Image (cartoon, rainbow, N blue to C red; front, top):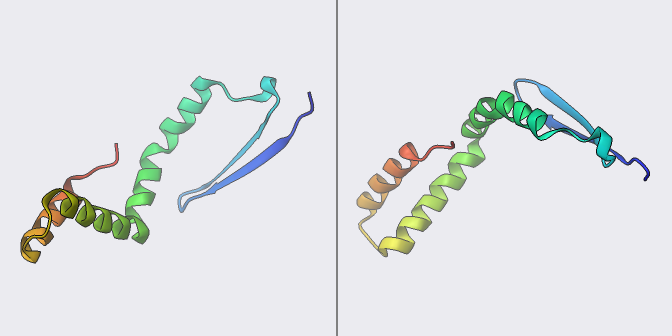
Amino acid sequence: MSTVPKIVYCSFKFKKVLLNYTLKQSMALSVQTTSKIFDALKSEVIDYIYAHEKYAEFMQEMIIDAISAKMGDMDEDLMFDLGMLMFDRIELK
């Protein structure tokens, strides 16, 4: 079996992570190693997502769409208040 190297760059404000992995089974990361990488990056990735303008825009649009789909047309002030409460209380785990 031939080895096909792949390089993935994940660039975040806090650091660059270089993962070099192959399709060769002996070089694959174990589930435990992958889990440790996840644990190390999780909070910083969530902070990065929260700080990105696209996240706020996406969430605001999706929240309004979801409320409208469930509740139908409603007073704009009520929609705004519900949307802000949802936005403030929804968290990435």
